[in-house]
Image 1: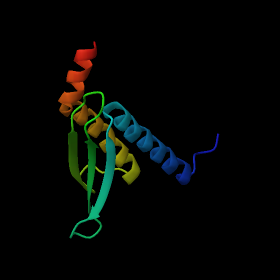
Image 2: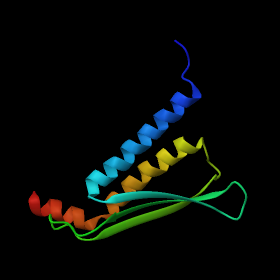
Image 3: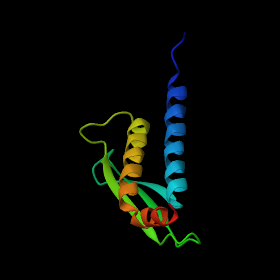
Image 4: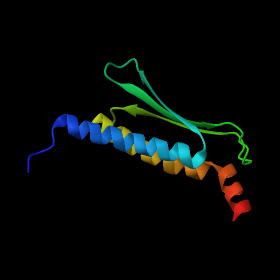
Length: 109
């Protein structure tokens, strides 16, 4: 069986990243943004992932969570693979941060 092309590998990471961000949006009822900004050091970027939820009819209050990381760093892999991993970790961190969602689920259950 032939090896996947570099393009196929990159598309796989993009799809996995999209799935991860869509899951976070769905779970928290929030808009997720990824912002990539160049730093003063050449070829170095700040990557911020942020989730914002305005008040909703379900009684979930306003909520936001944000993280910012520098890329590349000491344990860098390919950019898209790294970004997917960072988004996955962001989803876990956001879940711990979203007390309003936990309270609403507790009231329902």
